[in-house]
Length: 138
Image (cartoon, rainbow, N blue to C red):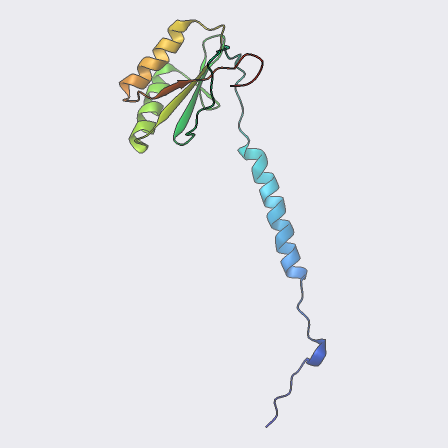
């Protein structure tokens, strides 16, 4: 008994639906990527001769302090009380939480000291200070 093929040699795979899906995915990721971009706080970092790029980037939380003393958690301005709560939550969710402080070189040390105290009170002792190497980035 012979089985006959209905399409014969003219059978084709229609690529149109697949191309539609691919273009929809591309459009989706392009739109989402614009919302994901981080707003970077402008900070004039101090120069340090011994500045080095840290090796382990995992578990880091960025805290920026602008020249006017405003504290930023990531890209969001916060008060010291809000920062204390956020640092405490970061510490509870990540045992190896590390803090990176980006303080403007024109900033008063008092604000940096308060941020360090907030971190210490939350149980985080691994604090890294961002700086620039003379003539380059650090």
